[in-house]
Image 1 (cartoon, rainbow, N blue to C red):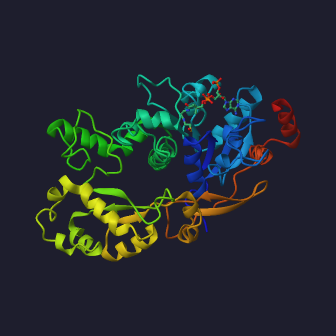
Image 2 (cartoon, rainbow, N blue to C red; image 1 turned 30 degrees about the vertical axis):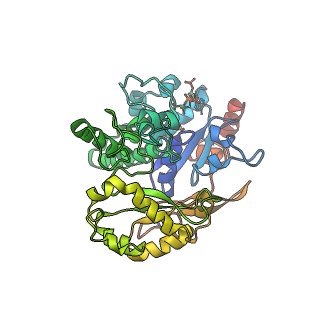
Length: 416
Ligand code: CAO
């Protein structure tokens, strides 16, 4: 089956997570992604957090599937010459080096544009160009702090908290992928490439938009009704951390189930959706609450919402998280078990849909990785192994017209 991005050639000049997540997604959908790596070492994640000595770490394999690897020292003249050739023949170049690194290497945007006016240069940086922090190098957790996620995550009596979800890295990569696809469609219309830039701070903030909404509501009203601080606690002039409250229109909380004393994940998330109040009451054995004026509206419930959650926890005490959800789903109540990585890894539905994929790798045997979370009616992305360092160097050089003697010479000059 032909894939929509087949024929799109991408120079993948990325490392760590934000850039590789973007190019991996495009590779899944058929793009020819050539990862350019420093000879001898390659992407730092090849060796970070290794679980098997001398074998590419999962950190690398899970972010670089479906790609080719070309080793090239792009600071040496011979390497620069290869990169120039590649730029002339490619559609997109993606990079997420520290600020100014590409310019220092001799490939500022105006040079790339001169080499190939149809080129799309896609960049990830910590902060956007012109921002007063635009000289900073940034990793995931730095971005979560800079983008507003940390100040609004966690409990009110604890410090700002980082999310385990890669809001700064993979999320920025996903934003960049959208930018690249948009620029490709734009190029079809104008015949011209362009630079696409996404900052990690902006991408985190884009996901925290509901908190920016709440800041404005707080500025106007002085309180936020859906937060646990209302009505008994205090508000300052900034959006507080709301613990496990969503802060949206539907109050919810993480509730204990049978076995929570020994299993730290024996919990469900329970949402009190306003129009599901009657089914909730029936499900938890409190039909008398349906018409009770202390309970039958959201504003009546809010002052004692934690007493209501406590009552639901009493109902949950003899049910596992899975048993509880199996009952609640019959009443159309939005809820889910708190799932562990182990449970997700073994979830038959996720295996079946390709969201979790098992991939054979030349050196590590089979490993688990995430597959495409985007499903298509006419395509099922097939996940193939990440490349070994330099696995496709000769193949790529040959495709650029280098002879065997020239390739051997290049290897010699690039040797570390
Ligand atoms: N051949 C020769 N040199 C190469 C090369 C190659 N194939 N590939 C990279 N390099 C060089 C670059 O030219 C650069 O050299 P100079 O600094 O001398 O100009 C250097 O390697 C890479 O620098 P860097 O600043 O990107 O790397 P770092 O490890 O110091 O910083 C990071 C890493 C992630 C903090 C930084 O790249 C960054 O801020 N990136 C932008 C934001 C981002 O994407 N962060 C998310 C990372 S995922 O958590």
